[in-house]
Length: 293
Length: 226
Image (tube, rainbow over all chains, first blue to last red; front, side, top):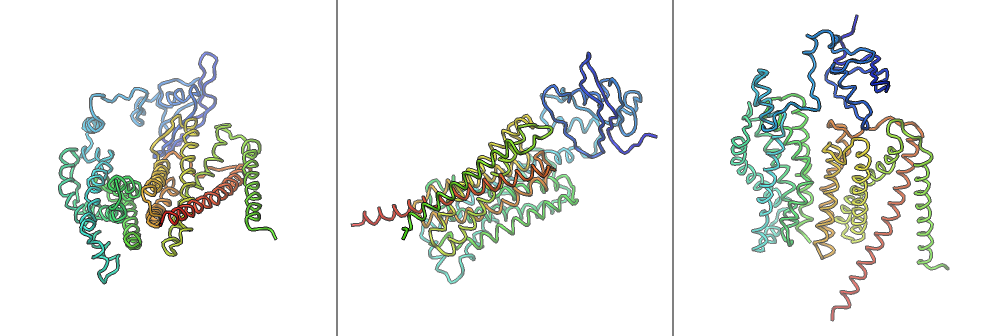
């Protein structure tokens, strides 16, 4: 009795071309859900192996099974596994998104645009847009204080410097939120991304992301506002430092739009929250060192 | 009674010879002692250099942040010199990590670069180092520069766990702790140790250089005052 536990199985697979042995007694077992990469130098037989596994090439000896069935002899078995070869079969005049939507509609996938949004990097695009627009706002954080000599006045107040930081942070988070009230609807309209099923969940992702970006941005803005080319330095420095926040926020947004609130979404949200907390703490502690000589 | 400078020079010579000797021994080990790997052959030996400098790149930022932290508390510029030296050497190690990694990747994956999580976070680390050095060069007053550097390094060091855990948290093609023969493991640790001692030597020398620079600048300023 053949076992059905492997999605793709090759037993003692061999292929010879005109006396040249290309595949020599290969045993391979791939389980469902596994991602396997076959790598090797040119001419090592990768394409030959894949074509044999795809039942496009008859092996010289040995057998190939898909879920326990032999695809070469049982034609119904060839429904079980999809193949993309050197020719992708995609439509070059359509965008990636349009290709995916087309295929989804042809195969009667339910909620095609939501499923497509789950696969594409819409989260990353949105958060990069928020970052670059937001950095302009963050750069202006301390501009007013520098011009009037107001910063010393603020620091003279009988509160710790950290209080000034927290106040600036709150203002910057509010500014980013206002920015997003315009940016997100615009983004939804222009990219054709569907609105998330539960918009409330997006609010928590966005607020945490804002907190993380503003925490780093406010601290660095205090550092760079006096310098020549300060804006440039702020952008250059802030981007690598907020990468953990942007990454977690982008992934959480993608899953929110797709409506998948499982363990993965929670993991990203936790990571986002952790970095937001870490950056706010770091900013609160370090701010006094930035503004006081 | 031997004067302090002669003693110091003696110590430096000993250390330099030790570090140099260790490095040479490490390279001999890498090329002759370590067994040849099965699938990749000789190219795999780059791993010993790549992993050593990668660890040092991470260590450099941690050291820079730690000494920067001490500067913020003590306000003694000597800590800033350590911080800057560690960051400069760390930047060098980060660059070497990316270069040796690309050389290996061109053979193993048939591409010089890919946006795998570990590679991307390593590149972010390199960007943090570069940003640190860039912004420092823009500030003239030594104490202001030290403050700026310390703050940037401390925020930057928060990225280090992300670089380390990138291969375990996310799916990618960068190898994750592959199984190695004991001899290979031994060569790896020996080579990491040798690189680390060489790094330490360079760190001391660079720090001393920075201190002398700052002393000269102070003397120039004192002379310029009427």
